[in-house]
Image (cartoon, rainbow, N blue to C red):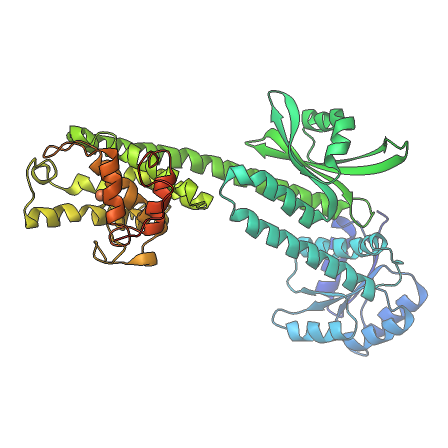
Length: 498
Ligand SMILES: [Fe+2]
């Protein structure tokens, strides 16, 4: 970068001398000074400067008048206004007249370097967007607008990424977001697997380049470069040579590279620039962090689930008749969910919540829970509390709102006469309506202290009898189609619920 020639115009000798010292000795500029606006203007008329620093209040010609005059001579000469603390209005007025920037007293060398860097960068920015160094404002506005667009895209992409908790879906989503962010024809998500680099997910032209040039990807990973671009021509089947440009950004956890993102060919045909590098790196860091967080969450989630399952097993161990009840109920409920085409999220709720549906029984006295004979009304009221207790056990853990709903409502009845809240029909979460059928079927077909297990057909008959009253008829109907529900005389029949 060539040495900047700078003019300082200020009637205050302390400010003038300080700026002269900082600009010359620290910032390495070729600096001249002037005591008044008039002197300054004279110098500008006779010499070429790259930037002017000027005070606003000066004898003979003030700063605003100096700016106006300078603009007549050289409209593109950057002028930085020196203002006192609390005089921002003056600076704004000066910028309306054409000043480029302002600096507030007292200033530091860092403030000055920052301003000089901005002034040095502007012509480069103009070149990047295809303009001439001496044609500025519109181009600068365009550059600013382009930067605004890319920062907006980055922000949008980061928000979407922050909501991605499932590592199974992350590859596809990252590829989609990466394409949107850098506006490229292709994006690939690479993973290092046992020393080999593989495309986990890609879109667009990445695969074709990968097949012929996979060693280049490996090179990037081995070298651990922060970010890099390689350009390659590939001859296709019709012997036409295609020119490709690929930007690579590594994915890391604790400084270890575990994969990378590749961006192939900008859609508008331009090459990748420094801004693309910065965007790709920021995006790759966010993706790495998301994956790390998700992995930590999964470990935590699995530990928590295992702990809660142990708790359920300890409850079931108290009563040999209910052993593995929760596991069977979960399996039956999952079969129904599959027949009913429930969403993946709802299936996950059943998979986790099914095991825990009776966790609230830990709060019920053994004398009631394990009583072999008929329960009194009072004892039955106590048993009924288990769905609310289960909900309360999971309440402090913020991750399971839908599971809590299912647990709380698994003893509601379709006709609204269940507990604890008397919900009816579709007010009851579908997961709870399914669980109610699975739970009742298992209870009926298991031996209890006070009765033997019912035959499969008898249990099915009972479910059908209570369909539309205790149970959602659609759920009962779905149950009849499951592996467990099959093999009964009601199969392939449209039954009328009583
Ligand atoms: Fe229950």
